[in-house]
Every structure is written in C-alpha cells, then in structure tokens.
Image (cartoon, rainbow, N blue to C red; front, side, top):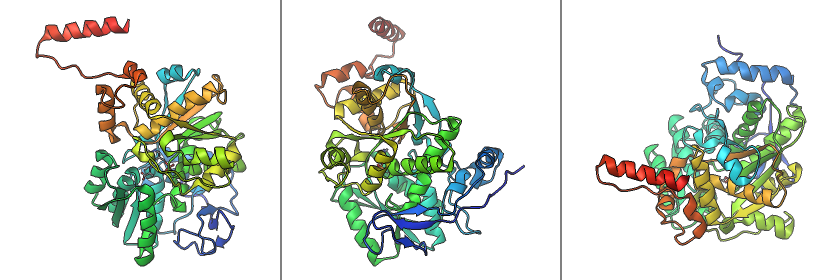
Length: 445
Ligand code: F0G
C-alpha cells in the first residue's frame, strides 16, 4: 500500500537576506534585484498538524514511490513545492545513517559521540540532498543547462542529477585542487568539465558572469533551493533521535551553505513545534581557510574577512564564503561557536574516524578535530549529546588516506605516527604473515 502522496504542500516566497525584499514571482534569478544579496525561501502561511505530519513521514518509509523513498522528498511539506505535475529528479538521496563513534568519543574525551554520515548519499556527499531539489526546480523552469563552481563534490552531484534529469551540466573546478575521485565522477556523469586556472572563489565569480550571458542555472549553494534540500539532513536527524534534539551539532565550514541549511531547518522545526530546544550548531574550518573564524573573532560577524585559502582538505579550500551572512545568523540563533583546526589535527581525526570503521574525507574530519578543542575549552561538556555531520565518503580522497598511512603526509609531524597503519610488504609465505601478526599483537598489548 502506498503512503499518502501529499498533505497540503506549503507555498513559499524567495526573500532577500539583506534588504528583505520578496520575489513574489519566485523567478530563478539567484540574487536580489535590489541589493544583489542572496535569497532564502520563506513559508509565510505554513501550518501543520505536527503529530499527523510525523506519522505521514514515517508511513512513507513503507512506500515504493520515488518521492517517498527519497530521504529529502519524504519531508516535502517543509520544502518549496514543485508544480503539481512536475516529478522530482531523485536518486533516492538522504536516508543516511546515524552511527556511534566509540573510539572517537574516547579520543575527544566525551561519554558518547554520534555521527550522521552524509557521505552515504548516492554520489558520496551531502550535496545530493540539496541537488535533488535545485535540479528539479531547474528542470521545471525549463533550463537545458545547469552549472556550478566546485571543489569537487558539488560538481559530482550536479553532474549526476543533471544527467539523470535529462539536462546538460557545466563544471568549473580549480585546476590541480580537486581529488581524482570527485573529478572522475563529473567526467563519468557526462559534465562539460573545465579545469580553470584559479581557485574555487575565482571559479564562482567567473560562473556568475558566464550565466549573465547564457540561460544557465547555477546550482551552487547560493541557490536557495539547494539550501532547502539540505535542510532535510537536520529533519531526518531529529526523526532518528525521536525528535529529542542533541545539545550540539558540529559541521565543517567551506562556502557555508550546509551550516546555513542545517541551521535554517533547526529554526524552522523549533518554530513549528517539531523540536522543543535548539541544538548549538558549531562550525569548524581548516586553519588555512578560516574566513568565518576570523570574521567572528575579529568583527563579531559584522564584516566578512576573506582569506587566501590553503588546505589539504580540498573540499573546504574556500576563502570567500558566499553564505557567510546566513551562517552568522545561525551561529547567533543557536548559540554555536566557530573553531579552526590544523592540517595535522585534521589528519589525526580522519584516521580516528576511520578506526571506528566509518571513515570520511578530510573535510569531514574537521568536525572531530574541532570537537576536541571545544571540549578542551569547556564549550562542549563530556556528558552532552553531540552529533558530528560527516559530509563526504572516505573513498572521495584515497590519496590523502594512503599518503597519511604511509607517512608521506606532513612527514615529520610526530603526533601523527601513532595513528598510522601502513601496509606491510611481505613475501608469499605463511610464516612471515604469522610473524607480522604476532609482532602487531605485541605492539598493541
Ligand atoms: N565537506 C565537504 C566534503 C564538502 O565538499 C564541502 C563543500 C564542505 C564540507 C563545506 O560545505 O561549502 O556548504 O560550507 N564543498 C563544495 C563543493 C564547496 O564544491 O563541493 P559548505
């Protein structure tokens, strides 16, 4: 039996985050026509029977309809509504697991630690939850081309959704600074992929010029529909926690779309009465790409301090984050904080997440590295309930992992060695293997 297909879907408007002017036509321009700032979706007349809505969401798990199987569209009452006849482009995104990280909890000095793994999405990153919504709106608006600037994951995701939805895709990536895994996805899914002699921030600027000259829809997280889809990470998380919110949610910060989306969802759920308290949402950046950390510490969130970004966690190698104002608002509303972590701290945290049998890409590991610091300064208490958002799959960047375990990454950094598990080269000989195993057991005892 199919679950009910739709309760009344909410109507929405797009509003400028700076001057507040509303685009009543919901046109696909991504910026405010008056002041050029970003837009966000607003749901003025939304009223739901919350217990009924929660039941409907659960019932949809028993349905085989694509819209219900998707962990994004399952929550469609809280998203902008597609036209009556339009079908979403869905690769059955969302529905990601919430794991216990026992070893990582010990490493961070907390009683319990959970991680919601957004890397378990169809293309291996959280981007899919936003892409299904934004790509569907692109197709509904009649676009033949979609495009993004990317550090890799957005391009992989966009290329997949564009292909599945019958659109063409243009990718601008910073030459030499995206991982092979991500680049290979964009190529395989058929994107027109341009390696540009610039960084991510330069690629995004270029893209905004290109789309003024051709009807191409930008699917970066400046697109408000991306943010709407990514809200479902937090909605699904609350459902997994039986609507009992944790004390802390910790996310990596790059262009700051994801933290904005999760924060927006938390605020909307609180306002709707789906949760009774707001978790503190904290954002962690790499020291070499710390624009938001500097912005908060040096200006109190009033003025963006762009930086020249440099980090081996290439996904967050971003110096001029587009959604910084939205992220500041989330920090203020939830009482979260910002923290920065070094390259060595990221590498150690990544290996520790791996040793729990979970794994993630380097950018996701900033969450554990940051948590350790937040515990050390007393912002997070050991008994509190904490959820890390892991944003990308461990197979996105095997080069980093292999170099780390072989001792080729940050060679000479002493604290790294205890987390390294290098491969052992042996002759084809059972005795040699058993001897190695016994040596290993002794070293672990
Ligand atoms: N983690 C991963 C694995 C990412 O790919 C990104 C961003 C982030 C964290 C940061 O998220 O930008 O919303 O603050 N990657 C983008 C891309 C920019 O092009 O794939 P954010």
